[in-house]
Length: 546
Image (cartoon, rainbow, N blue to C red; front, top):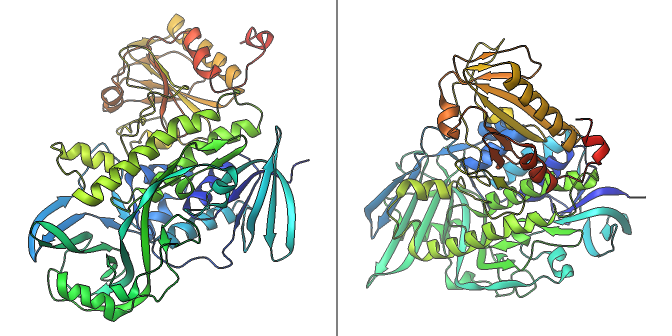
């Protein structure tokens, strides 16, 4: 008997996103957090366009946009003079831009989303140990009611840089710490810098940066999260978290307005006064990554798996995508519908991403984002986390000439369908909890051609036990015979352009919004091979009826 299907340790954005994705797939979760009270500091503040796509699929996009501020770009000052300006302008086919939102607001939205679905964070409850066997995880929890042990099918550690889950698993966490210490503050600044633009101001001596100020806009009037190097009297000890990982907030004296104002007086591009200090702290930064994201029935995600400089606001967003990648696979495993190797693809897909993010943010912290690169648009798309590629994953397959499986499924605008008066976007159609099959048709789709698609559709539903939604995506002048399949018209031709679609092509989109398999034309062997890597085998007798 299991007390829960999945135990999630850590209720920050990563753990809460994992819980939300599991709950919407019908998985029983418990989510615990050792902190008795929710934190109120603006640790992570940037939300990337790719994360907004995930939030749209999760059903919390409106709440996030209502509470956030658009991040429009960055102004760079060196020795008091403007030295550069970066505009956060993405290509028009990208549906969302960059926004700023304090981490505690992101958490609040996720917790309210969970509570509305009957799952609540258990606060003041710490994981103190666990063991696992072939069938389950036995976790020891300590909280207001004392110590007790629960039995779960799986355990997910989202418990931060000083993760108990990671340590108990015995995972390595290789890397190093930056020598510099920094301080953060959440303040208001009475300057005339344009709204929505971050400000980075540095001082150089003999060509080397020896002082730095970074101000990130937050929702509210003239509000910013400021970061700067810490003065010697406020430095903290190396053991930030009581272990050898020198990463996170210190327990020493918090910087006051005077300490922050002193840096502003030195580096701000114009005279300004800081006021309304809501929160401040001193912190240290390390860069580390685990040797594996899972062992047995236990997984790590977010800061428990990778830590690095906050350059480019990659950390929280990478962790949320860890959670999104893992959740749909865990849901299939809990339902006993997953292939024996599906869960191993979590490490195969996400650890290379984590390795890249750690290396890139360390380099960017020292040299600047995109330093030495000439393709500014590519740099921006990469920072937006829109170029993540699972091409080497063991669970994606492709036919020659199609868009690369393992890449993000592009959005497409100008779609229409019966009974809807306004044009549609594609991505909301891909937000279901399972796979989505998109069949592209043009000309006359009837008779044998339509029968073939319908036969393949029945076969897919058998292979997945119904866990696939199917759409016909039709060119503007296509005639389609009688069918029960939903029809989406590619009225503006944007789908065909984005997907390089040809008649008879099929695009299988995974639950996390990445292309899993493409083929033109589709064939039974290819579909079977793809879904065979994801789903438990279907008996031959059942397949024979499809």
